[in-house]
Each structure stands twice: as structure tokens, then as C-alpha cells.
Image 1 (cartoon, rainbow, N blue to C red):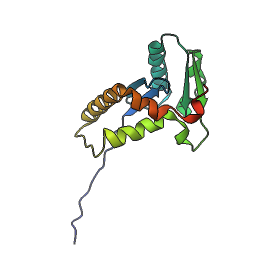
Image 2 (cartoon, helix red, strand yellow):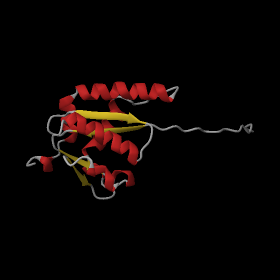
Image 3 (cartoon, rainbow, N blue to C red):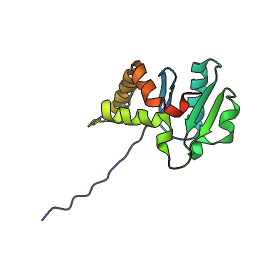
Length: 146
């Protein structure tokens, strides 16, 4: 007979926002505490600074916090293409998440959220240095003429 022990599971979350260039493998990421419109706006603000006014096309899913009308008003140089529902394979950055899980965070355990975020930051820095790998993750055949 097993003893009955009360357990309270506490889950914490952190979110990685990333943009990945299929052209040159450049990776831009922010680790933020929430997935919402305000954090998406912060990410786009920082991405726009990184682009220095240059144009960008971002492929995103149709999450509500990706589609707020006010998001794109501030960034006319950033064009968004929304992928069809249930098709994550069409989004280049989804392949980054798989690469992170398989090559940098596999069997990873963190004692705290701070430890996890430190590990994520280190893994993302490593990925940013792997430009050819990042390019290969994001460059799909249908992009060749773009």
C-alpha cells in the first residue's frame, strides 16, 4: 500500500521570442516572462532597432497576441505573413525550437527559473554563432526566389 502524500505542483513559464533570417542565419532572441501583446510589441521594438529601419518579413502563427492591430502600426518596415492554422512546419523559427531541444536543452533540468533562463541564454548565444546551421533550419525551398 502506498502512503498518500499531498503534492502541489507549481509550474512557472518563460518565453523565448525569436526571429531567424533564412538569408544569412542571423538570430535575434529575447527571453521574456509572458506571451502577450505587450511583450510582442517589445520584441518588435527591439527587432526594429536591430534592423535599423531595414525591411523584414516575419512568419507567425495566428496567436491572438500576434495579431493585435496596433502591433504593426509602429513598424511599417516589418511585414507579417500569418501561416495557416495547424501548420507549424511552415514557420522557420519552429525548426529553431526543435534544434534547441535536441542539441542544447536535451535532458536539461533546472533548479530554478533563473537557472533555466541562464541556460536558455547560453544556448541561444551558441545558436547565434552557428549561422550556417541557423540558415539551414530556416531556408525552405519555396523561399529561393524571394
